[in-house]
Image (cartoon, rainbow, N blue to C red; front, side, top):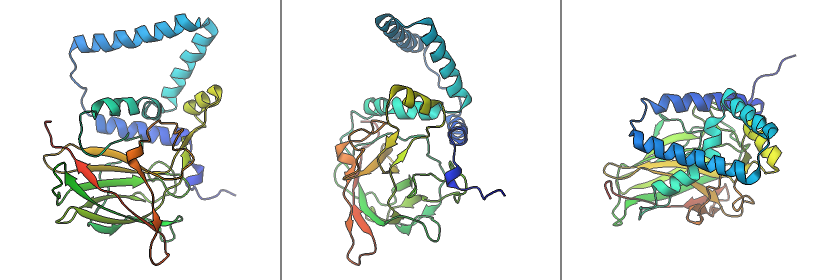
Length: 286
């Protein structure tokens, strides 16, 4: 007898295919990059690969295994996962090293634009009996001068209490634990949600085979994703992590920053936790 499909039936191939589709939809037209820039970057990447081969005396069998694995990454739809886990944190570091405001982090492969718009004081869309510890997340969005940014936009998404994301795991409501919050006249927000759980990135596909072959672990610490924006200011993409999580020091995606760690405390009525965190946006063109 067949059972109803649930989030626990999620597969690397399934989430990888969706992540690839989302990326291609969002990418749009090809970036116009000067030939000299393409040549410089491609030459340096290939030179680095050649150096690794020479220094480690790569065998033909190993070369063929790598080639087969690279092909399989594409067939599994896991290039977005691979790039976001092992490469994006350095791109983010370089792209934001000029900022004076809040620290950012990687976007990851599970962002979906167009989530439901919500008021400054709101509850994220969730199931009637959504598992997990209730969390009230509040704060303010300001500029680097400390001035409030009324009407700022906060796109927020995170995994559920079992580590699964809506739209990437089956059986979850479309916008579960996803929302676009508009701050009030003083830049404040107060969002009711549940605390997400740590999770392993998908391990039944090509990325999982790399992890197993290298003897690594696949865990990411629990985190909340955000994109914070306001007219005339740079978009801030960030992840907030939770104090005490055992994978803060060895995140598989190397994306944790000390400035992004929050420490929720029990609220007064004992119904869950609450935490405050403020975001400071840099002006455009600096």
